[in-house]
Image (cartoon, rainbow, N blue to C red):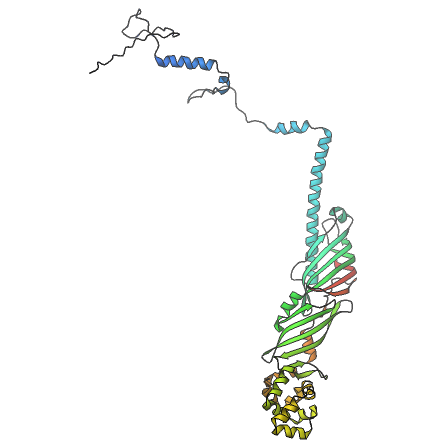
Length: 430
């Protein structure tokens, strides 16, 4: 077993260590043996020596903390004054720079005031147009030119643009009316009082959209498409006596007077399936006529062919001799020769079945046509059908008792009918 070592408090001084006298302890004698300091004191001395040589010590040294109850320094604290800093910096600028800054600030305020005045004037003009034109929504008004305040002071605006959507014109709605007014004289007192305006010159255009036409006239399920510079094709279905008949028509667009557009409808026809075609009117090519496919079906069926020959009016109109009719009634071969001849087929297709079917209502039923449809077709006159497909309109009356607006060129485009207009001397407001 190892003998424990006894640690002595006496230290052997190393080279470079200085001796220190230990303070007199209680119970000791003044002439006690001199001892070295404790290791903690030695470390503290080393740290103080290191700090004395450190150049950053003054910078990183913390201010002494004031404990509770201690007195703060006598000098009074006051908040920093930053107001003079901006004045000092602005004061250091040259007069030229100060002038530029002042001009820029003034220009910004004037531009802001000018834009505010424009918005105010546009709003007043839009509300006035809505009221006088009886529109459901206020139009878009855009005042051109800068600055506006100088124009307002001169009581004259160089250019004014107005866009009015969805303008009611008779039975249809104009998709858009755009106009550019020039040399507009403002009425009113003061810069903020605008009671009306007078337009010296105006140019614009009217668009009648095919999409709007198809939606508004959708009860007939007819669509309109452009065909050339002044023609519109109408294709779709039309309900007649509970049947949807295919309708075809061509409309020629032309100007009507100074403020209207007319449509001349022609080539109107209603197809009853592949059996017959109805063209309203009293002409030779109008009325109810069998289709080539229907005639071919009749001539191929001997029963239907004999029923046709049993009607005296048909025999008389196709010019069949009485002897040939009697032979056809007893011989299928003679019947086929008679009904298959080109002359018989041509005359049968050109025959108007309206008046014949009125006296022989069973004839239409035998041909596969609903007899009630005949009554509906006879009531559908040419003017009535043309009115259903008409695209005519009149421009609404513009406000004011002076001036005029005239329609000029009319052109059919892909999206609709576009009409140029011009005017002068128009007035809005009082």
